[in-house]
Image (tube, rainbow, N blue to C red; front, side, top):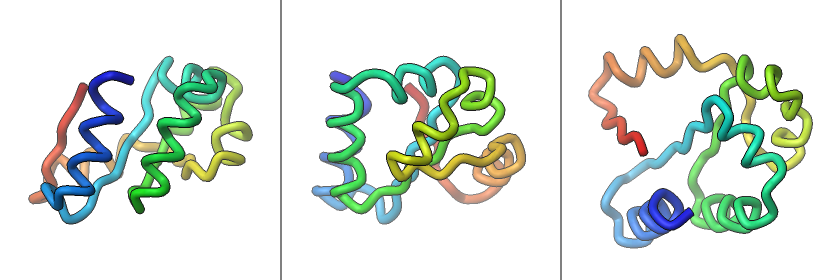
Length: 95
């Protein structure tokens, strides 16, 4: 919360990147579904016109797919899309 969300919002506001897509993986899916502080931070991301996706295998494993969908997060299997990002000219930043 003290690194990724401030970076994302500032990166978008300052035009550091044209397009920003946040991907939620692993146990972060459960945290994102259940933590109200993260809900507020995610709303800032949405308000800044960024996309948010979560790995369906992860969200299903933690039984939070419907919660995250209800928040406006796109749920899909990410193995293929993430590989495409890595093989393209896209920049991938991990925290």
